[in-house]
Length: 199
Image 1: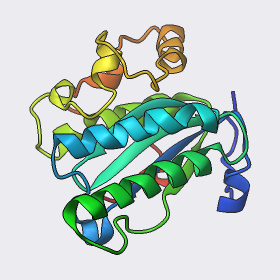
Image 2: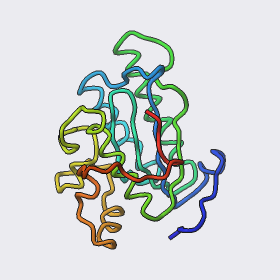
Image 3: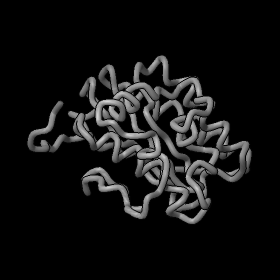
C-alpha cells in the first residue's frame, strides 16, 4: 500500500511506471459525440479487447460516454497504456472518419492519465466511473448503461479484457458489498480532486 503523501509525476514518468493504477480518459474535439450508435461503442470495446493483451495491462473498470471515456488501468510494464491508447484510439478514429466521411482529429488531445495510490482511491475511482451515466441523466440506474463495467461487478458476464479480481479483493478486504462500486447512495464518490475529470 502506498498510503503516504501523494507525489506528482510528469507524463514522461507516468508512462514508465509499472504495477501502478491510472485513471485514463479522453473526449471528443469540442466535446463532440464520439460514439454515435451502438455499433460505434461496440467497435471501440472490440479494439480494446484486441490490444489489451499485447499491451500487458489490466483494465479494472471502464465507461464509454457519448463524448468521452473513462478507464481504470493497472499498468504492468512501461508504456503499456501508451500502446493500448495509441492503437485503440488511432484505429477507432480512422474507423469513424471512414464511416462518416469526415477528416481531422476525433479526440480533443492525447489521452490524459492520472496515477492513483494503491489504496481506496481505486475503489473510489471505479465508483466514479460507473456512476457517470447516472450522474449525466442517461439512465436511472448505473447498471442500465450497457457500455461500462458496472454490470460485471454485479455478477453479470464480463468482457474478456476486464479484470474484476483486483477490485473485488479490495472489497473483500474492506468487507464491502459490490454495490459500493455500482449503486448510487446519495453521495458523490469522494475521489481526490487530482484524479477527477472535468466533463
